[in-house]
Each structure stands twice: as structure tokens, then as C-alpha cells.
Length: 300
Image (cartoon, rainbow, N blue to C red; front, side, top):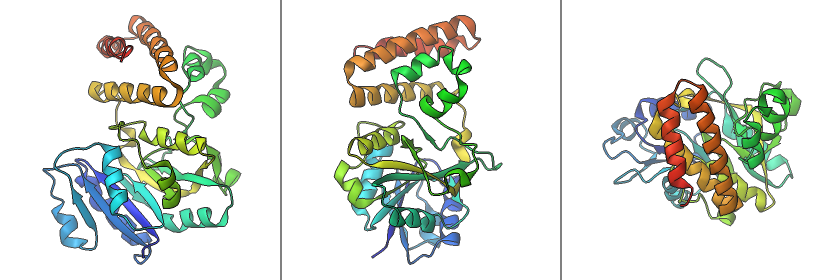
């Protein structure tokens, strides 16, 4: 039986996937893990994977089922005691499975999800964890985040770039949530919370999963000694379709985790924020569409 199941959801990412797979086999004992690719791209047959990595299990979906549902399909087909959810646009640069396992099995900290330090391919650090979205966080974004920078960054920001020396918390740092590009979790714990919430198509499914873990009494950890390159983490937010999907998922998180009234309060605050941005900043079309989308979402 394999110790770890690595689940990778592919959607139009085959240009990165080969490097991702090669890095896993380069740094990790192949007797330790299995790889399951859940392919959400019907037009991408992953021929190179089938040709060169015949021990990898590929699950072909007839359409893009979304990140949450595809991962849940992978979970049901996996056998590992632990599961590593890994983005196809990542590359590991050391034996990260050994580091994750060492942390998980040598600590008695009621561990939920774990994640490592993500880097751009320039070796510049990325956001690797964050705080749960909150009304207080939104209010700070009206200007207080510029005044109380450290407090906002450490206690409220939904995405955190950790610039501290990794020896500051070499045995892990407790955080709210782990970025979904890499999530390491014990199967027993995952079974307890019933996997990813499939109401989330894309975005915030990692945040919501970690929120449920915390509510169950588990602690989520950032492990800076685990280093992973994440190629697309620097992708632009200028794509309006992506922005609108993020908005929907963000409010779904608010509703599921805090209730409908808090969700409505969050939408109203963001309408005010985007209206001010529309007046002051130059990206008029983007903020107009965000305001319009928020008005459509307020009563849903």
C-alpha cells in the first residue's frame, strides 16, 4: 500500500504537467507514493503521461467538473494514508513528501492541513497561506491596512507572503488556511470532514476546507522547509471572468461559514469599495462590472 496519494487536477495545463510529474519522480522514492491525475480537459489526452509514466492513474472527465469535484473523484480512487493535492503548474525542488510526513508523524498537534512555501520560478516568494476572509478584513481595506500594515498582514490579510527566516518556526506555523496549490492531509482527517465542498467550482474551496478543519478542532500548518515552485501563481487578475468567478466563490464562503446576513454585509461593503475605486482609479470597466456583479449577487 502506498503511503501518499498525490492528486493532480489538470485543466489545460499539460504544458506544465510534464515538469511537475518529472520533479515528483526525481526527488521522491517511487515506492512511497501513487499519482492520480484527474483530467478536466476533454481535448487534452495527456499522451506524454501515458507514454512515459504508465504507473500513473488518469481519470478522464467528459467536461470540466471544477476543482472541488475533480479532487473528490481523485480521493475516492486513491489508496494512500495521506493525500497531497498538488497543482499541475507546480514543481517540487526537494523530497517534500518526506518533509510533510516527518512533520505530520512526529508532532502531536492535532494536525489538519499542511502546506509549504510557494515560489515563482524567479525564486521570489508567493502567498502560501492566509487568514480567513472577514468583515474586519474588508473594513481595514478602506485604508486602515495602510496605517496598521503589520497587523493587517499578519492577522487579517487573506493572502500572506511570509518573509521571515524559515528557522523562525522551523517546525511549522499555525495558520488559518493553506493555499490550494499544495495541501497535505491525512485521509482519516479528510474523511471526517467529507472532502471538498462541491458547491465551490473554483477558488475558495481550499479556504472553506481549512475553515471546516478548524471548526472540527484541527490546526492547519505552514511548513517553510517545504519548497515548491508555482509557475502560474503570478497570473494577472485583469481577466474579468476570473475576477467575477472569484467574487461568487468569495461570497459563497461568507454564506457557508458565517451565514447569509454576514454575506450581505460583505457584498455591501465591497460595492462601496468598488464604487470608490471606480471614481478614483482608472480601470473603470473592471470596477463597473464588479459593482454590477455584486448587485446581482446581493439577494442570491
